[in-house]
Image 1 (cartoon, rainbow, N blue to C red):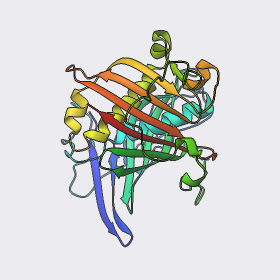
Image 2 (tube, rainbow, N blue to C red):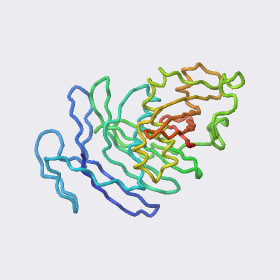
Image 3 (tube, one colour):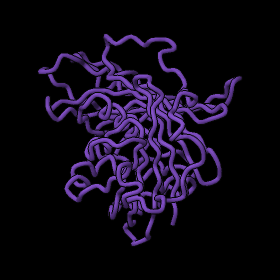
Image 4 (spheres, helix red, strand yellow):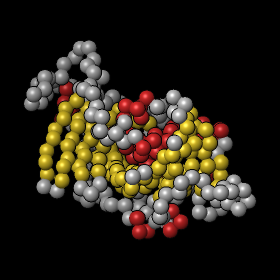
Length: 303
């Protein structure tokens, strides 16, 4: 397992802290990018000249040997891997790729009126069979007691040649979201969702389609359950894997059935069971504001 370094600071605009997760990134000479090792993993720096061990105040140097378990996660801490995978899902959805989550490297967080996270992770490109570093910016807000929003406003593959663009990630503009997807979250599917009245707008995913898209559908279900169990992260982890039972997608207009699943704006009604057999009903409203790299997921869960 990885070691952790934690730094905490108080800023004038709010409270923030950073966590760094130490871990190597695989070197692959067949690709045209080199992940930036960064100061949190200097023991793995390339090229090959050795350097002095990297010491951190009050922490021992990183040494080889048996793996060390990380300290237990705070019971009220945010599920950073969940937010990291949401940012990666947004990238895959908009770019048509299939990058896969490998490991969390570090994150920075701060709080103003909402929680914000800048997360760096390692991802795998299965086509090139190589790993690279990925960065995403995710905001998390509780709209009311039973509804949560996760908003992605930026992502990028990072390389030493990729400069950081100041102010490149702007806030999500809710004012331009289609009126059909505004307002209070629905409690569940509308009456007659699959009858002739609403059939043009609603589509029940086939079992084969659920199997094909199960990775991000499980991600949506996890986010929905997190809206109920924000202070029960251990219970959230133990509830997985989920058994996806029935998934209905609702769009504003009549579009081809399969295109509903990947529509920019859609509402997902997901019924699923936890590993312990608890029936859950997640409502996920996915919207965009027309800006590249932007995606909003409003969720609630019924049990």
